[in-house]
Image (cartoon, rainbow, N blue to C red):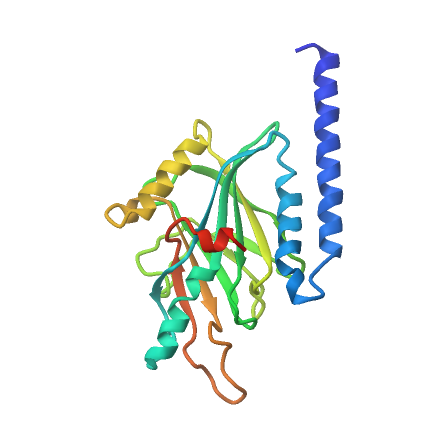
Amino acid sequence: MPTNTASALTARSGNRQSRAQRALSFAYTQLPLYSGMVSTLRNAIVGAALALCAAGTAGAEVYDFNTFLSGGGGGQDPAKQRIARARGADICVDIREGRTASTNRVLFTFWSQIPERNSRIMSIAFDLGRHSDLFANMSVLVSSPGLKPQISPGRAHAFLPRFSPKYVVGFAPRNGMAPGNTLVVAATLANGKTYANVRSALSEGLNPATASTGLRVGVIALSLLGGPPPGVATIQDDGGFSMTSVSSRCRSR
């Protein structure tokens, strides 16, 4: 490629990155002042983050976590169980391809629309199954202010039985991800891997017959019913959930 053409492409890419960064900064200054603005502002933050992908995105799908795995799950009261264990339907992830000029990656955008404002997502686990060489690394692309997410090597948790995560996203103690917050995780594809490989691994992970060998995502959430009142240690309203299926409910918000 001629030097002047390459320079022009680099400049245009830099300008797109700069505009996206400015848009992202603006979105951050417009944090929710009123509950009715949460969805709009979440979309602004996510849109600005996705604009950082200079070569565009493709193949987006939105999934819920409507499979309760383990945990308190609402305790012994059947009515509370039904509510707590259904909260996974309001935990969402948008998965799409996101390429830059130099990086081939996949973007996982997480948010919670649980109606209980005290609820928190405390960790997110990525179990790659037999596809351990699918990603070269994971990093946090953008998150709502105050979340302070960190990605660490995976570790098992009792709330996510039969999960063997390679990567875990955690948050500051007693913080977590509240309803209306957004987190975008960028997974860089390993050499020779494509988004089609990710889609295939996801399909394998979503199929109950092959789930243990596919790509699965799980979350651990607390205070699904609002948490305990003062002086009470727990009301058993916590639990682990796994990504379940494409969700019209998540997409509609």
